[in-house]
Amino acid sequence: MVARAGDVVHLATVASVQFFRPIFVRVIRELPERHTYDGWVWIEGYQLNAAGDAVARRELYVRRAGVRLQSLPDAPTKPAKRRRVPVRVG
Image (cartoon, rainbow, N blue to C red):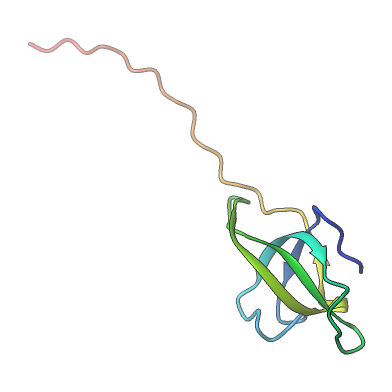
């Protein structure tokens, strides 16, 4: 799989043992100028939190076959605002 700018990928231990705790990354680009072993690639991207917000910019060394194109997990929705009704006291 070739990661393209804007793709959201899921990285787990199948991509590299460093991802014992899986993460989501929004890809900026692959770094072709770095020499790697066959089947491995450097990816530059933003690590995402559960809400899909970027929390850190990272350069990651991963197995190409372990990179999974993914949609973001559903963000928790906010409950609807309740209209407050005046209360008569006394």
